[in-house]
Length: 327
Image 1: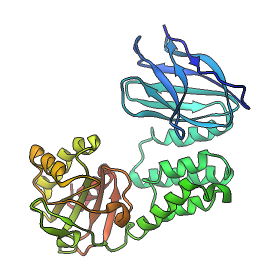
Image 2 (image 1 turned 180 degrees about the horizontal axis):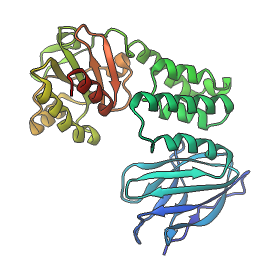
Image 3 (image 1 turned 90 degrees about the vertical axis):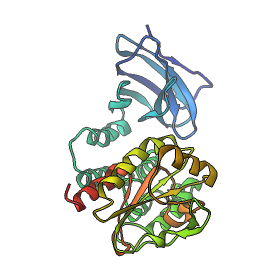
Image 4 (image 1 turned 60 degrees about the vertical axis):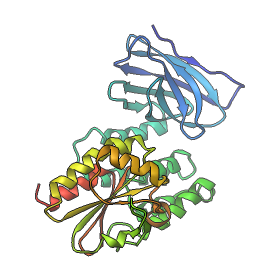
């Protein structure tokens, strides 16, 4: 049996209520409602017979929230606690929200959430998400959800598109410290967005010799650059897939290079040897200031002449590679 217990505090101005359903919940599951921006626990969430026991509470202002499950990394995201009753439905087996709604902002987010369950190709999904978030930012330039969506979905958009979305925010939100940092990063990334020529970046090879991207890019082959680090668990999970691409296309015109991020050569080299990574590596690089890479794993695909053809998560770039080589 589960019960939803809200963490209480002083009387506040936002009166929220949560109800909904939870699929695949185990009797010992413990769930938490987390303020995604403040990294603060708002409520402890339990369920009974697959349904959330309705609960209410107060906050000083609306909060963008996610659900965290005890003992599991990652969040089920995202909805807004605001005046009124939000209805959420989540599936603990696949670890995501199936539906949200019930209050004005959550009803709008419902449209964006629904796109995840439609069988859309990458280009169509990109267009529809951009359309939805452009609409939300235009209608709610002062609401915290707008900058949150722009930042959390930046990996889907080009830097130019993200900067255009920021322009739709109120002057106050545009001048916030978080938006200043994001704009600075986007301006760097804009210099290396799809269609631009590569920028050189220096590093050292595993044997300690100076090396750079220009040693590989613009030399007549397609080049896949994989940004990773020894401390990044998702990166290490993805490395076998990158190795598989290397093995599949190494004789057909594709070269792969690894570029480590905020990592020591010693730790990077240990992983390279343990996992048997067969392609060249660049250690001690600065991808954040050169390519605007803030989150890893991350990949960039260069054309034979050095033009940036695609960048983003590996599945997106892999589709482009398969298309190039007729797979």
